[in-house]
Image (cartoon, rainbow, N blue to C red; front, top):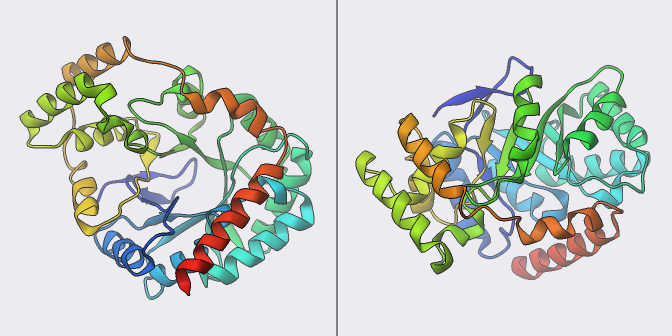
Length: 305
């Protein structure tokens, strides 16, 4: 496994971790896959209270001493006491005494960010969390959140980033470089869109490059992401075979000419992702996240019967 420093800390984390969004199908398979991934070195496991699977993730990480566990508080819990209570619930569900990285899942503009960050600082002071992160924050929101704290630094921003979803390149990539912020790329394979017929020409080009290295197009796409010194990725894996394929995205590097070839190709297809159209609406308040969390919790309970 390859490692990178987490933000300005002296702690190193794997360049590839395990994303668990939508892991609500086959619990035994999910647990086995996560444990296999950890055993292979992908010892950063990311979840969220909104995912409804923290209990399953807790079962998966049980017995491992080297796991870096990251979870997220839902936007509807951004009031001070709600943040504290949400963290306590996550600790209980995960079965851990301390969360390595506690993140704000999305901005919630209806709650003063100073109140929310104050709760995170208190949790860190109390030893319940080690590091503070955010997710889906733009530069302005990130700076406002950082300025709201007295004694802590935000070490990471978890963002949607892939070879097809590149909104963060407008300013967040450069900002992370200048300020030593780790970008945690979720949906690094564009939620499967990379393999759709719509992007067939891109797939052909990536496959062609991959053949030169003995790699698949997915491995090329992941390698293209983590070449950036401030980016790590958390691909979801539904099987041990997927874990093995993800792992083969490291240990080699695309050449400068190959990166230029990919970037030139992308310049002709880059489009604003549909999800970004709704981002301003999502960030207004956290009402929607309560619905999503309840839906996922019901799905998890149904699965466990």
